[in-house]
Length: 183
Image (cartoon, rainbow, N blue to C red; front, side, top):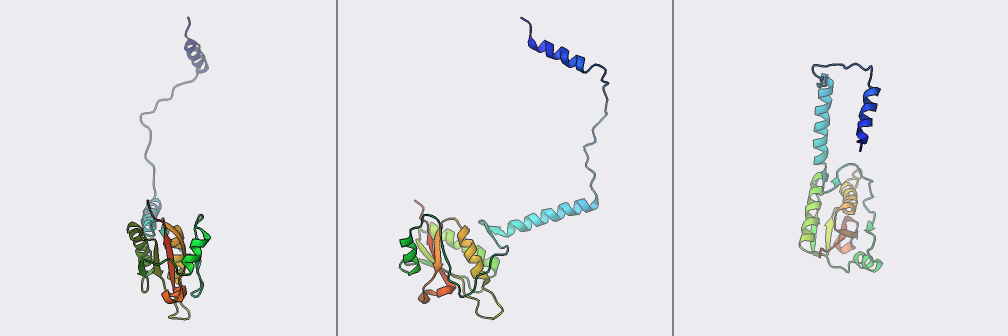
């Protein structure tokens, strides 16, 4: 029985008939870079390092949509029962731990919030309070920490829901945060 590959070899050889072989001593694998390319590479590397510093636990310090200092916040992930959310809003789920972010920069607040939520979940807390303040100290000052906390809590792993606290616990300057319990 004849091997079918023999025909392929013959077809290839006849197709290559008349083609001359070009011989190289060595391929030029060096990429020529200008000083501006090297500078851009260093710039991109530095920017990537700085970008890593701006994101912790998926929380960025990039610009967020600002909320008013007196605005009531309310958020619930899908699956949170309306009855549970109502109890949280009324302050009927007692909070077990608290974090006060007064006086922190945005970066410090992000780090503290991330650590606090992680520790609270590790300690099996069901509900915590986060005091972010209202930024009423100056007319021109906006509620920056409140705005960031509003976005960060939506992204933090294990946060089921949050809402503005009752007046006795800080009102629009604080949030009750309902946490998922790991089994």
